[in-house]
Image (cartoon, rainbow, N blue to C red; front, side, top):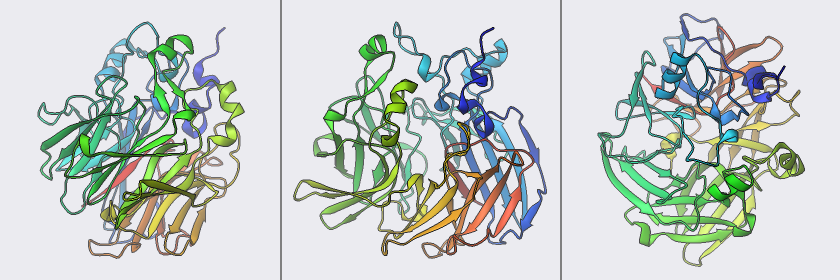
Length: 462
């Protein structure tokens, strides 16, 4: 009898495994005391397959599920729902999975992409949008998490939208892009503070690549072109849609915010891959870009290939300093710790900043499906100091900074994240004091069930 994928794939087991019930819970139990100045909702997105996969499963394949925890006046309530894509509705009618995963694409035809909406969730101009980078955003109702449907900016957005738009803290604009394995490979977009799509600009690239994220400053947009190359020919010959071609190096494109494709300046640096930048800012003629960088990405390689390059596929905090006048790039590793999901105070997106936060791996995972991250780090990029909150055997996710109030200083606020305890098979919503990360949590909200590991979330204040 053939073994099911969920019986052998670590990304379908432990706390990576799906939680297949939707529900709500009010007046959750709290350990400690919720800060009275913490009023709003934390939305977090992640992959949660509704059905047993048809074939090999990649963590990026799962259907989106939103976990939302609302804090108000010292009380907490929770709700979770799937992002109800057309594909998921089709599968519900069939009672089984219908779409192949990333590791099971056919080389004979253009792959059918399911808009899972499983990667990030953002709030802009009154709309709550679930995002995945190969499709249009999916609009949800903020209070009920009910799916409204795909959102195309009144028919103006043609093509996919990145899962990582940037909000300009001064103008309220949402800056984003979409990429494709077919021309145009990259298109940059701007939506104004009212949610109207006001600009779209095709950007020339030397090769098609998976461009997961980008960075912006007050005056520039930075595109990160890594040597992870799309190739339909390789899908037929090697069984993978993306191949690592490190000899190309990594290209950093800097475009003035008021410029266009012809104004992009490209800088070549050592080959590496970046899923997530922390932030960027300009300093005179220099642009400083802090990221979580892999030396190499074995994104869709076979398990045998991945094992041979295991030491090279871990992310580390990294800084690029781009000298626009000299045409050079300086590289430096900030820390040797394994760290990903970098975040900053969103009020300082694209501006000079001092503090950054990452999830980190300090101890080896317990088994294949053990926690990938077990600590939250706070970096003082002015002094080089690092503070650590180690969850010691428990698994955490991305930490999101929430300011105490609108005029709070940069680290005057809280870090919030979900934490999973494998001994209890349960989860907590943990609130840390951003000015005292190493201290015991300010409060812990006990969840009614485990919350699977996911990708990205954001806080929406009341």
